[in-house]
Length: 91
Image (tube, rainbow, N blue to C red; front, side, top):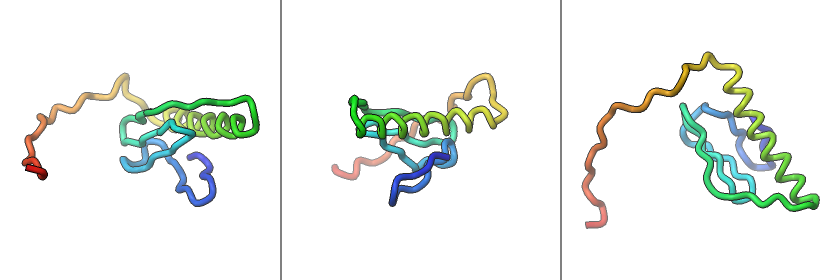
């Protein structure tokens, strides 16, 4: 679990499908089987860049620790559930 910033909830990798940790414009989207990364991050050579680099490292370290602590399969099985069609709410 990564140490949250003030007012930000803790990010526990693979614990739920709702938590998102944002570092700069880079988002780590939590899921039970995957962590999806979206966006970008510019790490500048200043104190702000150092803070972002530390936040990035803490988040990746938490993901690695969660993976190391688990009994992992060779790979995650793909979902066999067929997609469903839903009525367009805007039509």
